[in-house]
Length: 204
Picture 1 (cartoon, rainbow, N blue to C red):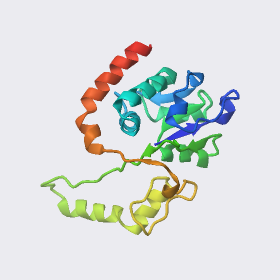
Picture 2 (picture 1 turned 135 degrees about the horizontal axis):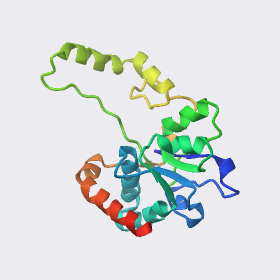
Picture 3 (picture 1 turned 30 degrees about the vertical axis):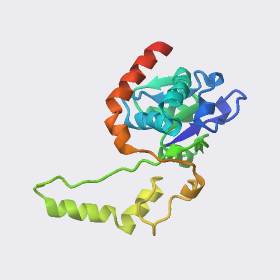
Picture 4 (picture 1 turned 90 degrees about the horizontal axis):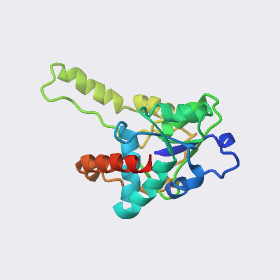
């Protein structure tokens, strides 16, 4: 999870470096975000803030974020709005930012200095699948060095230690990491999304 920033659209404001800075009222209506009740990545971003700061302080910080957000139903729209200059900042995935950078867009990646989530994608074989052999072969291929090299070239982080990340991305060792608890986020999703919806009504 990262910020996409189009610095030319900040009207002289500083480039925000953290979740806390992003909640500052001076960024009101500058930030593109997807709705946490519609987007999985947006929910992860919310849960990241709550886990980083604890729920009491985390909700306080996130309320400032929500007050600054221009919300959309689609997470894919978030970086596009920023790249196209409709908004100055977006909260999105690093590979989404990289695609616009590689396309010559006027944007940069900012990793939150107070920590971000590293959230893994997953693959699974359906139990009793009619083409189990082919499924296993595909999983093996996706874990191969050749496939993971393609993954890295496209801006996603490879899972193999012998395949390097795209050199345009900051090394993992240089990024402040939140110890994101997937189980907690899943178990509390209904409650957190309900609280998000209540907060949205309060800030509108």
